[in-house]
Image (cartoon, rainbow over all chains, first blue to last red; front, side, top):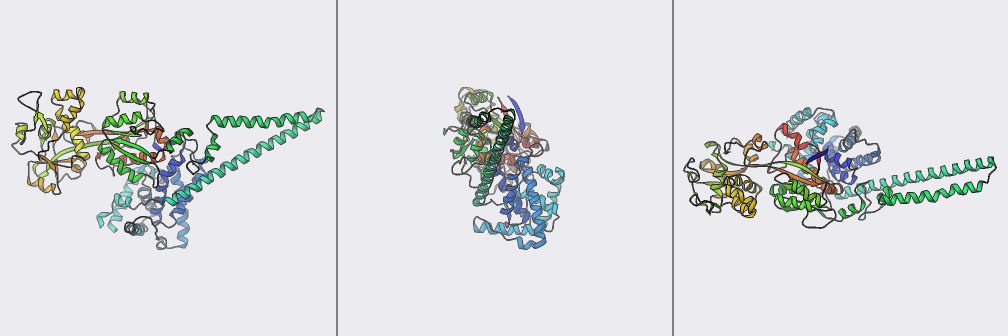
Length: 174
Length: 446
């Protein structure tokens, strides 16, 4: 038995022609949660998720798979949209004003989750911008350190070290 | 409360976006796709029309200057229109409807976003399916169920169906699978505690299943351990089989099986202590117990050549003899106070998953088997008898046309690579092995 062309799962989909349906189903929850963690609430998360996909859709003809994986490209768009949004929001609203959560699910679980997310957001607010971004990418989007490194320009080991330290800090303050 | 904040806790703060939102956004994107296509088509038609008019004008002007009859030339130019249109139509028919037709054609009440996926008939067949099938042994299925809960997109119409079966049966189901059939005996994903055999690949090829990918899924490893207070036991696979099998070879009558008479370890092997055999373990239906029967028990069983030969001549009997645990109380449920029990009784051994033992080195001392200690190196090197490599095989032809299956496989890979959600498998705990699990998906050629 011989093994042929090695490609990642996403790349596999791409080399076998982009299946946007599959990519949408796979990436939408990740982008959504990236923004939840980035904002610390559900307010405007849907709006930013929609904006990310609309932007990606509009510019998909410009996407070059030889330069980046689809997910990396999509998250780069999400990062830019998130940064713009946060910059604009900082000029108008205090953090607490954004912590206004509406979730679906059982009331008890949602209440607990809301409370924890809000608490996390308040703790993260004291962290440097870069560390907040790492937390959102790692735990919101659930992407691996290698891809986080590609998105942030840090080395993979540096990502791991910073995240370890951040979680330690959060745990101490929790 | 302090200790609560860890990776798992943080990931539990994730929430699924509402189905309503996902559907609405997708519909918006679909609409944009169609609008863009229409706009592009309109632009293209306008350009063609402008070129025709421009060309006609030039031709007329040229004819007038030359003094020839312009009407014929004009008629000739105009006549090109229908023939081009027919050619386009034929090209569209050859390509199964053409790109623009695929985009505009509604599927199950919605416009597909898929651009240039698998041929339309296959896609339609897949869309009519409501499930993809994952078949395999216990550890794979338990993990797969967990992963489906965690990673499948909300509101997905296509859900996985799980079929608990042996590795051989799972691979047979995979190899009989065909696109678009509702054959209940087929699987889209097969889990196995071994690599697929060349003969099985041949069956796949014969049945038209020619696009497969192999995903290493870690190692399923079990250990027998006792309290750290008494140090690690030294056992052989043969000791374990003789201590725990329902039937064992009669020492006085070769090739005859008798009900297991052994009650003490020294009766099994005179080199061992005169201690009561007592094994505490999980329910027999658990993945750990299944792995124990198929690794340590079988390894011990195979030390009797005539029993090992049954595997070829009478596989059902082989499985019954080698994998059936005695039910006379020697093996019993571990209960809630396992640690206390092991500390109280030096003879008591616990059947545990390797990860459980390695996570509590201050509590358990794992038995070496035939001189080999269970650790990540001996497991990966496959020298430890209580371990086996696990794989899943994916029909990649189906993967391409089933977004839900794509999400599942993607989640599965991530879970294996990151190891945080695999309850029974030994995931890559050595840096050197990480690349193997995080490695790109490989499609097999056979």
